[in-house]
Length: 314
Length: 115
Image (cartoon, rainbow over all chains, first blue to last red; front, top):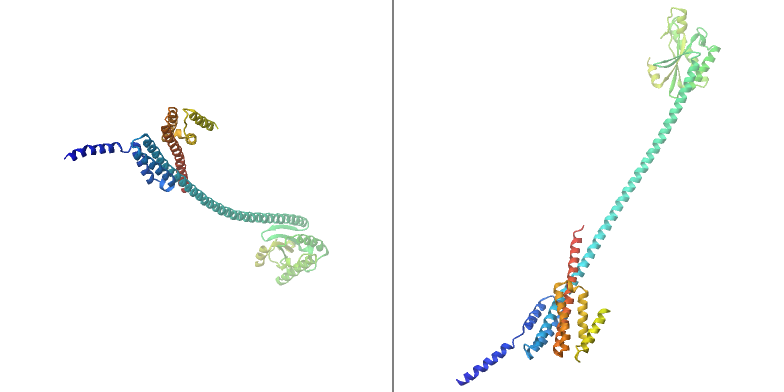
């Protein structure tokens, strides 16, 4: 029982001593900070700083063991807490730097991708543009060629028009001079030059009088001025005296005589056609000498091929 | 240069007082960390600024303890100052690095949406 009484104050004393030897708030903070640091990115990114923190904590713990509650323990614990904090922040710092490097690498990669894409698009556009340009160039050449053709055609038309006008003028001049020696009329069947039969032939014959040659020379001159597409139909007529057959033959012979003479004067033979019409188509009465004289005639009809075709039907 | 002269002067002053001195290398290291933290903008970061203030205050306190002839406590306080200075510097650096990383990641996000 005495032993118990002796023991109890001793235990209390020991317990009391243990109570004062508890860790300082600084040491508690240091331990917690170290635990946090171990859980942080410091373990991965700054193990050396973590080791430094651990060593600092061990110093503080040792000091606590040597002289619990001392200023040294508190100071070393304070330092240990800061070292753990430093290790944690350093881990965050390293992680941030690596994150930044990774992001920068991704950024560069993306930039490269975009640049390659843009370069491809540019190349495609340039090719497309070049193709369009070629098409445009070809179209321009085509237009230029067509314009050139139009110019040429226009020039040809102008030349043709000029030639035709000149020919018409010459033809008109020739006809005008013909009008002095013969009757010239513009009819539906063509331009009709009427030569008086009595001036051309001996009565009842198909031989040309000498004076007829002068007149026919003028006619030949006019016919040679004709356009190439014109034909000359030489038509012989008689009055109503005598037999029809005789008149028909005489008119044909006279038309032939005129045709032959004109051909001999250089008028192209293929453009000349001789037709005997006998006493048909009188232009005046056969009852009077004047009328009969007018009916005895040779008509030279200058006509187009269409007019000639229509004349053949008559 | 000014910083170097200040640090040297401080070391000289601390060394001259009381016939005892703080470890010059530790003082220089602490002063250097304080200057570096201030240079990277610790004063503009509340948490870093707090540690920087503690570092400065404790450096002065250490000097005072030397003057009082309490060299042992002075060395301990100098260690505290040094630890705070290093934490202030690292908090500031980490803050800048994190901001840069966030910006870089945002840039990647942004460029990622382009065709």
